[in-house]
Image (cartoon, rainbow, N blue to C red; front, top):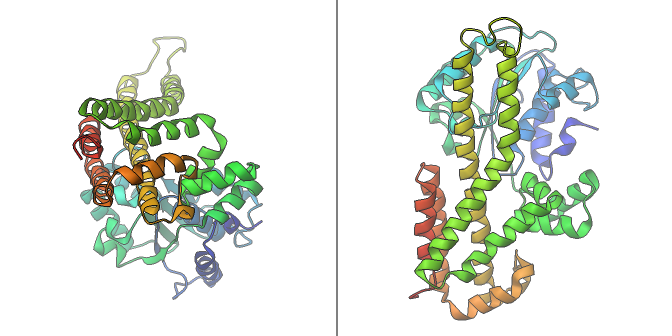
Length: 386
């Protein structure tokens, strides 16, 4: 099985990467193989997966067989010559880039290339991006940079002008459902539902298909618009939505945070004989707590963003109902409620709701207060006084 076999619906990308791997064996930069790449695509398209697969193919003796120790270690995040940078905070700061540049200055130790995969290049601060730019302008002889971002415009123009761009596309629902059935053992009915409502987001489709609690939470969110008939109900809906996002983030991070704190404390000598935790350990624990708090903040915002996208699919379905395109529903399980809303709410109001949802997503991305943002949104979505 090739390392590229997990890239769903991206045959054009696979072909380009395979050509690059073949060219890399010639030990020189060419039109097919260059030192910097930029993978872009909508959420869930697999841009990070494509970059990691490419990294594995570059260091694999068989150009990405998928079974050797090199391929398996890259996939597990443990290869000596492949570094995957994936921030769980709100941004990638310049200190992190400086430390990275020191590490990647070394020559490859196992394979023929030293590869850096940056999954969230769009989260680089301005100073961090400028530091990275210098490294890309003056690359090491055997160093390859693989940057991932939603769009070209999410990275500095000077960086994207020095990188080869690969645009991934959203996989079809049929492709995603097939992967869930064949690779994850999901029943065809659940796989079809997850692929349809996730709109080609492979990771989200897998979570939806494998976790009943996530499907229940999504159902609760989609039913909120049908309760918005007073200002009071709008505030109640906002509170419900933010609480669901907070609970989801807390459930995902609680056990992980505890393990990280315990491991770091043990590394600094806590519980050992003698004086206990070593000098500097308290600061290290405090820095870890700061990172965990930043990660939790991002997880809440990401959860809210996903919820807003779900709400957008509902209003989109209402527009489909008003256009008599009933076979085009994303949320087919709610068709009766969708038809009822389509009859009592004007299309202009539905379009305005969609614009308000997109504006709320933008505001959240600029670190607006989540509760205030969602309260304002729910008031605007309310059918009271329409």
